[in-house]
Amino acid sequence: MTTPSLAAPQLVINSRMLYSSWIPADPHAAAALLAPGLRPAANRAVYMNQYVVDSAEQTSSFGAYSLTYLGVDLAGRTAPDGVTPARFFTHYFNSSETVRAYVRERGVPASQGTTALELTGNELVATTRVEGVPIIRTVARVGSAIGSVARGHLLYVTRVGKRLMAGNYPYVGEVVSPFELVSLEFLAKDHPVYALRPAQPLRRVEAWCWYAPRDSFVYPGGEYEYEP
Image (cartoon, rainbow, N blue to C red; front, side, top):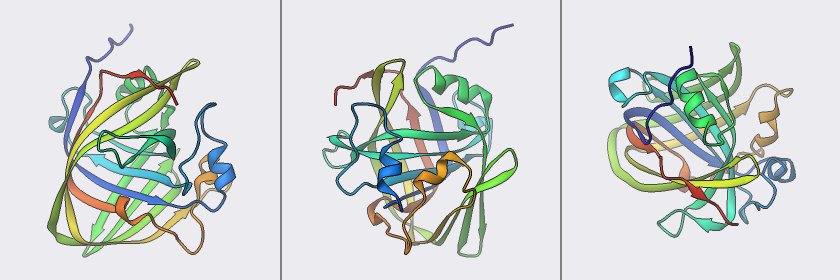
């Protein structure tokens, strides 16, 4: 029996989200993951989002899930704010086949994986696993106060067949203060995601390093063809 496609768009509220960005150790290897016709941003930055949706009641239809996705910032196009670069998905590790099926239809390279965010005191540890094996571990120091509310849109680019597609993803996140991204470890040298490992010492893109214990967003339903 075929599972019916979910209606678009899909809403998620109050996820626990750790977003980070850095300069990769091998910018050429990272850029090689881009689809033909796309160019990396001038600083060659990589982005990553590790988050957990704890209950089905936080979603319109997805159900509970965890996710790590990452990729490369792009040259030549920005989100609607005119500042944030468009971003291309290179990896997408999701615990839910329901979500994976939804995003695959839209060109996202979705595969199975789990993400855990564990907060002990002011230390937040995010661990991404594939087939039970840890492949990425992020450590941050976080405060308990909400320092600001981040809101706007992100522009993510995917490839559907030979076509590049883009979608605006609106979000509202309660960002904690203080915040420090302490470390980023790519633990599996034999996994393709290792191409995106950070330079050492860690070169953070500070504007895109933050933690929100409550972040809400929409998976778009109005994608359009992307012209680099």
